[in-house]
Image (cartoon, rainbow, N blue to C red):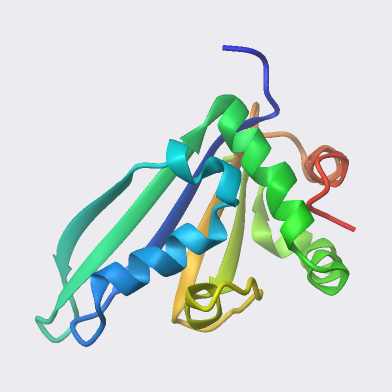
Length: 150
C-alpha cells in the first residue's frame, strides 16, 4: 500500500426504531463522494436503546488511498463557511492521542443530498484517522493541504 497521510475513515449513523434503515444508509452514503461509493461496504448491527428499543447502527469504512481520497473530495463538497467552522473548532474536534478528527453532519440534510455540519443528535458521524497521530498543528496542516480546512 502506498504511503498515505490518512489511515482510515469511518462513517456511522443510527436508525432508530421509528426510522427506515434503508433511508439512514442512503443518508450515510450521500456523505461519501460519488466516485468512492462503490468502494464502501456497509455493516449493520442492532443494539438495544435506552428504553429497550432496537437501534440499527450502520457503519462504512475506507482505508489507505481511498480514505485519503475521501478527505480530498469531502473538502471539495464542503462550502467555504463549513471549512472555516471546521478550522475554527479544530482543536475541539481533533484528538492528538489517537490522531482522529470527529465531524458530524445532519442526517436529514445528508438524506436530501446536502452536506451540513451539525452538532445535534440526528447525525452521520465521520471519523478521520491520520497516520502517526500528529500533533494538533501538524494535523491541521495536513488537512489544510488535503483541502478539508480553510
